[in-house]
Structure formats: C-alpha cells, structure tokens
Length: 51
Image (cartoon, rainbow, N blue to C red; front, side):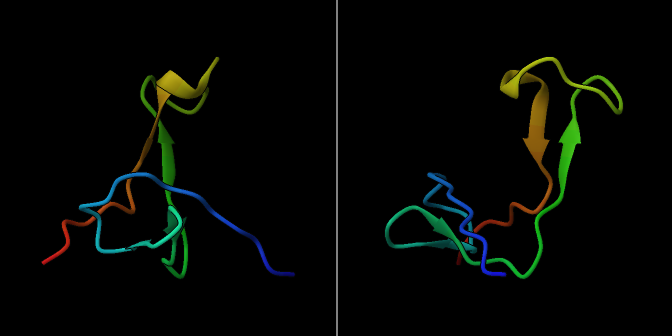
C-alpha cells in the first residue's frame, strides 16, 4: 500500500517538490505525552535540516 505524506517544511531533508515527505518512516509525538486533542499538540520527530 502506497501512502502519501505531505509536509510544507522546505528546509527538511525529507521535503520534496509538491510538499511531499520522502522519509522511509515518520515519527510523530504528542506535545503533552501520548495523547493529543488536535494537530497543534503534535510534532514531527523525523525532521532533519537539509544541507
């Protein structure tokens, strides 16, 4: 199954044209533990600065 993951953080090394994330896997965490009520309470731990 192919999954499309979108990201608009252009300075991430996994960002690709069309706002696509090309990382092999994605790690998302909750800002306040293991539960989130909305998107603002999450963060992507896969981010790495592009060179």
